[in-house]
Image (cartoon, rainbow, N blue to C red; front, side, top):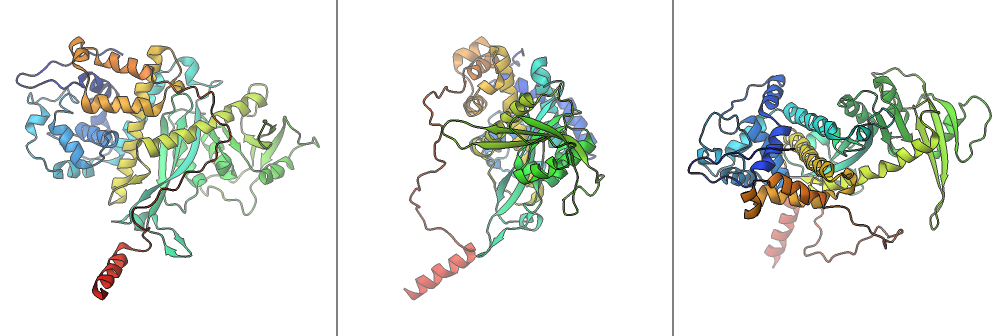
Length: 478
């Protein structure tokens, strides 16, 4: 991608991230944002903090090391968004027009920005990234492929969060944290987020799959789910919406499916059978869709590796043409599903989205989608870098690319790079070198344990208000 650096304005120093923001302008152009605002049915003013600037502020808030609103205001006052909107009719830079260090205007503007604008931006960036991929990287046997998985995120019980999502309970009473369930679909080749939905933890992942599939712009995409999603409801939704599925099912479910087969062939290693997934009276189904048998194939493979216990893999797929989708290739496709666990870890750990410091459910939804949008933007840079270097996107390290991209947006480039005017090319070259290390001596059976660190303070149990009362009683008694 080529982009010409913007001209410096008289009396104002040109930011060093002009070319980096040029790609952001291409992914999130002003005309598209205006269309999304109109489609949301809400009138917003294009003055100082325009919807485009607010959208960039939410992205930068997640990308920056400090996720506070004050960090965004500091970034805007330092000229970080002066070139984000080249169609701005005012010749005075945004940083010069902003006079206050208060976060009030940004917070109010962020609250007014419709959630639908962020959701449209998420889909728009994915579609652009998908178009950048080579034709052989966009499809698997003519289908787009999605990894489907769920996770949880943590909130403090403030505002309407506890009322909206509820709080978990155990034998000790109500837990402090509010836990939110999130289900997302990822593209196989670009690893970008295609769709996501959140709900209370009492809602099952399978119940959220329909809303995720409805966000998919590609018809007949293949959805791959692990054993937690290997239930009738997911197959029912996939059949109703026209999306084939490859689902791992448990041994008990596989036995029931095998009993519906025509014929008496035994279920042996490397075998497949035509089955009908018939819902029982107790089966949880989507009440808005037909409760009908779902035809498919039951695949069984026994995986044996030295040093590991044998694993029985049962897959149910609605890819019915065995000659087009052989058992070995479907199993190999499912074998790539583990990558979604790494993608979710990058979102929760690298982008620090495991816990949100928000005070309303509406704001949490916006910051959640803004975080996923930030993740997709990073993936966009990685795709461009991979194309420039002639390598696959999955060969690049997300965390290493994230560090360099964040540094470019927050600290700029060296003077010699700015003098040449090739900041974008320099950045993509650096990203292309951030390949994953070859861990040849990696231990295959590393225990999933960590050493316990000594706590500075004892663990807080119950509410903080009760803890304060106990401290006051102790002080009074002393």
